[in-house]
Length: 139
Ligand code: ATP
Ligand code: MG
Image (cartoon, rainbow, N blue to C red; front, side, top):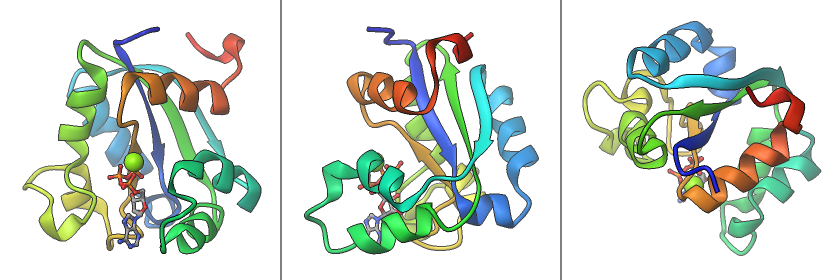
């Protein structure tokens, strides 16, 4: 398992609001190397599979509807301690509670439209990376 990698998505709200460039700039300035990168759009079924861990949660339908509502930018990122450091960079799930300077504080609209995804473990980083990118797309 590659413990120095994490997976991220710039969510439909941040793409729609024109924040792709600013978010990628913050990510690389924080020391992450881009391993993989693409713009794509999830189907509802893709989003349901990706967020299957949340299938019993009351917000699952809303979450999958939103995540498939428009294009996203997905990426694999590399840095020592990548998962934890990227979670620190993006900030709390609810942007109202996110620290100053974090990506969600800067770019998120709301709890459901919170701009950026970040993997929550090394194991999930690998699963999520391979869900979005073929081996030949990982550099
Ligand atoms: P992500 O997995 O997208 O990085 P997270 O790990 O901070 O976010 P999770 O608990 O995994 O948060 O929830 C996944 C996503 O579901 C959140 O990013 C948020 O958009 C949405 N979500 C979480 N809790 C709620 C809620 N109570 N109401 C509405 N949407 C929610
Ligand atoms: Mg999560």
